[in-house]
Image (cartoon, rainbow, N blue to C red; front, side, top):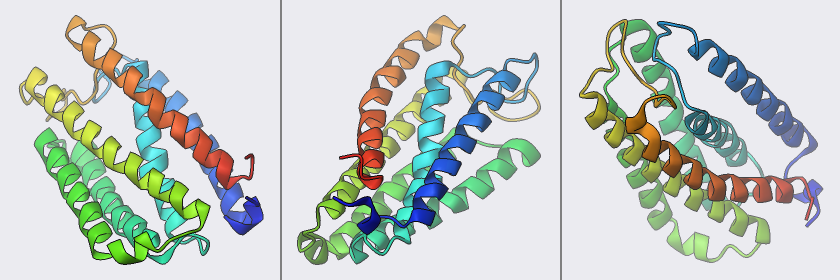
Length: 215
């Protein structure tokens, strides 16, 4: 497939710059969270890699594809609906984390489930149109939607495990938001996250290769 028929030059450059900025932010964030008494606590490398995936795919890649002319109209509706839902959460969650300091993991879990229902509902609404999509790139985008669904399920699971383990200690000036690498109770969840990161990133790399005409 010719990349010129998939994403515009501007869209591809936006992806490159956005990915670079997310990586720079992640490195800076990881270093800062190591400081003593840092709000939210330390974050493990596996969880940082997961966070980079979620930020890039949910907040950047999906909205961009929702505006791409080459993507089939029903898929654009799915991606746009999800992007609006996720960006709304992002604004509210950042305020609750860093200003009000009253973030509660069950809120995130509820939003993950709501997002799953939203994606499923839009897909069902446009099921006839989606079945009629024949362009190979649409099939790749549909695969990305599948990865979004999987990642939302994982996020809900991670959050529920974390909430039970910290017993609700996620609020106030000393609230914990992240899984660390130093605490033995997080060993298994860090290992599981690292394993789950592999197929998610594997598909993402192949998908980006398709977008850029690498294969």
